[in-house]
Image (cartoon, rainbow, N blue to C red; front, side):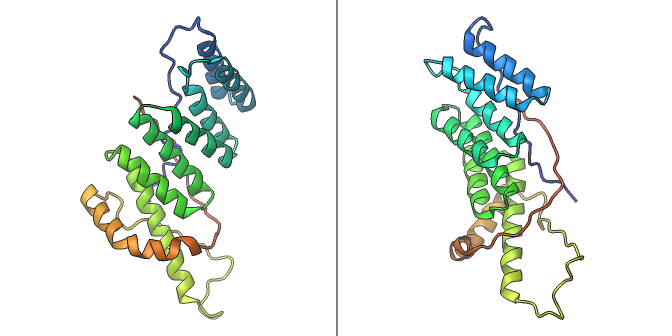
Length: 214
C-alpha cells in the first residue's frame, strides 16, 4: 500500500540574499532550530525575521512558520501561515506547495472537503504535482467511502465490531491527468450534495516524508 505523502512539501525556502541582512540572519537561525527540533525557538526566530522585514522581501519566514506549526501539530495556525504566504507570494510554484501543505493539514484533521479543495488548488497551479494528485484521489476515495458507509446504515448484526480495523486506499494509485479529470467530473455533482453534510470520523494513516527542491 502506498503511503500518504503528508509532509512532501515541508522544505524550507532557501535564503538567496546576503546573510548580513538582519531578516536573513533570523531565518537562518530559525532553520537551524527547526532541524534541531527546537520548534518554539524556530518560531521566535521566524517572527523576528518577519518583524524586521520592512519591505516584504523575506516572505519565506512566513512559509517556514507554517512548516513549524505543522510539526507542532498546530494545524489551524499552520493553515493561517500558508494562506498568508499565498497572499504575498508571486510564485505559482510556491503557492502550489502552500496549497499542498494546507491540504495535508486538513487531511490530518480529517476535514476531507477542505483538503479536496486545497489539493485541487495545488493542481491548478502545478498540474505536474503527482503527490497532490495522489492525495486528492485518496481524499475523494475516502470521502466517497465514508458517505457510502453512512448511506448503508448497517444493522448491529452487520456492523463491524469496535476491535475491527479497516484500511482505505484509492483504487487508482497512478492516476493520469486525464483519468483524474474524468473522476472529478463524475464526482462533482455528488460532492456538491454531500460536502456540507459530512460527519467527522477518526483518520489514521502512515506518514512518509519526502522532499521537493526548487
